[in-house]
Length: 234
Ligand SMILES: [Fe+2]
Image 1 (cartoon, rainbow, N blue to C red):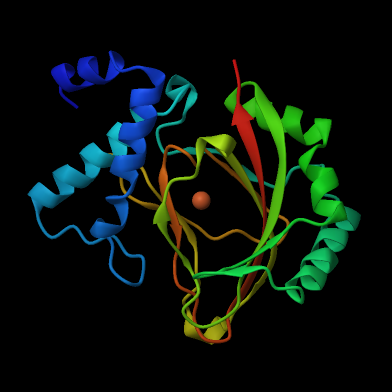
Image 2 (cartoon, rainbow, N blue to C red; image 1 turned 120 degrees about the horizontal axis):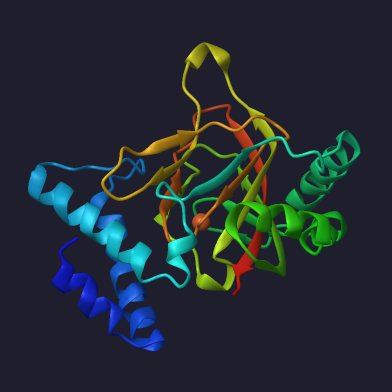
């Protein structure tokens, strides 16, 4: 990014940065096709996309704490015990039968187990170890991608939960298809990165600064996730 532009951004107030960021975020989808795949026709479009991704990143508060690819952790934390995983998996299935909202995926809000986990001090400390100090938002949601065509359009998350913890609860797919849906991040000036999480695996993402999506699921594919939001604090 050129220096004049970044100097200009640094002079904006917090409110001006937020308004600009919301405006720019509305342009994200125009770079993607209906399958949530990035379509960069030529180097000019590629340059525009990278500038957009980088500007969104630097407009986000505490962006100096962010990893360049927007991912802070991937793995199997000790606090995901077999018992916890089973409880969350069962609660997710239970919640699935109580529809709330449906867009291009199904959002069922938390439940007793999910809500308890979202305010766990142990998990909050775990997240802080990778991204710096965070506060729990107490917001946990089950996400379901279980109908052909489900996915989520490329976007950035609200700053109310700038850190997004994703726990994979279920991923059923046809091994013969050799094709699975993934969480994908699109960091500026870097190749997109696909994450195929195993059940019990956790991803911690700077969701309010890095463009991300879930690719469209295939026939007979089913994904259940739990997401928990955290707020970056000083
Ligand atoms: Fe998101």
